[in-house]
Length: 473
Image (cartoon, helix red, strand yellow):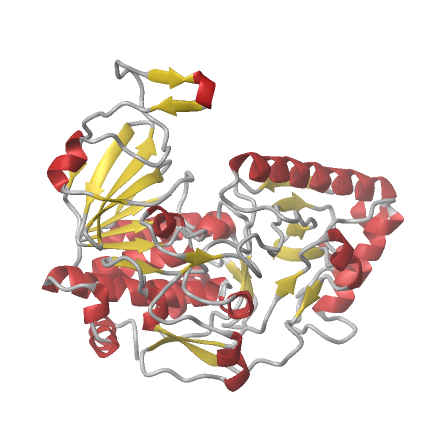
């Protein structure tokens, strides 16, 4: 949906274009049945202008952006479609974090998880966490910093004045509401706000994909977690290779699923320890689904949940170490790897990874390798995951990749930043999302408080501010 370039006065009186759903009761609805269209009536919306920075999406990137912007002195509003903060960490039951050993907010999160004994592993870069504790921790941090969080709220439309994003419209139980701020941050994961604001974007390997698959995660309880050690990745070791490493455990787990009579849709089914008798199951792939196609993502979610229970019941019938296996929860949100990548003032490329590119405005150094999940069932049989057929070198994400090219006043954080398919397959993990959110938050706050646009703020100002806040050494 393209944004309208519209003045504030016209905004309050104009019909909201772009096909977003209306909210009850307005007279004069006209149905054009012959053309398959419905004419939505104009309505006046309440307009709120009480924030310096508005963050859309409260996943790892969004919540980090909101906390950091608030600590930098901005009044912040944070909108989230689910009933908790954390996105894929919590609603998605990810439970496992990669590329987290970075300066700044990542270390504070690690420390605070340790204080509540909610983290498994001594590795600062890669570890398992408890999703319910993560929910509460993020809520506490937003409360401490004064972030105004609104859950169960989806961004439905965006409006520009000239080339600058000025107003968004949300949908919730309260109906349609309009919000205005100097700076916005798209941390939706799928680049929803950027697309609504009229930015150019890419997805997958080309505009119509193929895309990386989606996965629905689940938590399960077991009778004897020690008996599952041969099948459980990172159970006392952080190794990928070797007889007790991730790949060996995954292959042993897949063999057990096959012994139970099922061929999993994901070629690398994985079992993670979470706490005592609580484990995480990553069992399925849903191929060829775009995250904005509501009907198809709904079907993918139903298929994923059905497959999880089918595998759980089959394993339980094997008995032995699988006796008593029970699903405790399935994710509210299916895990999306591939969404829109909003065009920014710099585009990350494969060449950046080949060269180990260094940037003067580097907001994060990525050490996680290229991680491309098979884009079809056929590819999954032979190569469930590949690394792009090259070995990457640690590289920098520049601030410019977080600033929209086509629309002023808009930043991105998380997997919807500007990059190509290969680079995205590396930087998309959540340790990098936190670092990107932290950078977007501090720059957005500086821009809003000083009357500038994000691209007018130098990264050196952001670093100085983060150091003053104690979020950089």
